Length: 231
Image 1 (cartoon, rainbow, N blue to C red):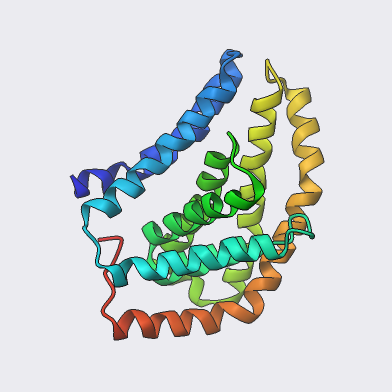
Image 2 (image 1 turned 120 degrees about the vertical axis):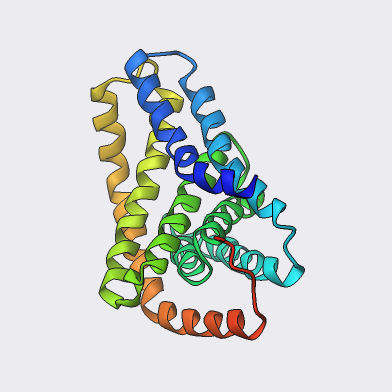
């Protein structure tokens, strides 16, 4: 079961973009509902696979702590729209503990912080977007790409644009029916300045934290023999 879920991970991650492309092409009036369901389906294998491993409390703790810090950071910086540390923390989690931990950190950070900001049909999109950032960070960390500071900052910048793309897509599919290219230009164009602020903020938060946190987390991982969540 675990191996099957591992193989299916990329396919499930492609579920959301494939659904909204099909919906956009077909012009269905149920696009908003279908994409929310697709976002939920995309996240399901990660929670199921983690549960199947029967992790020890100490294996869960880094994910819980990092997700809580990310959620708290989002709340603390609430007065500054899009200037948040969440993406930076999710990247650090994925790079330190692997793609599955990265996804779960991002998804849980979105879910937990929305207890403060408000839950809604946008929550699965946020869980997916931040989860995807953590997942990609885990892959890049495994490939040693994120050992280079410049690569970290470039990915941090791009990751915020990825997040912005998915949240703008939620707005597009949630409020426009049928979806047209004119509506897409309007929505993505209006969202770009906010995504750029998020991108700059992510790099700013990564600058003082990435190396220090990764070093500390690596020591914790080794000292307590934490489970490899991507196995």
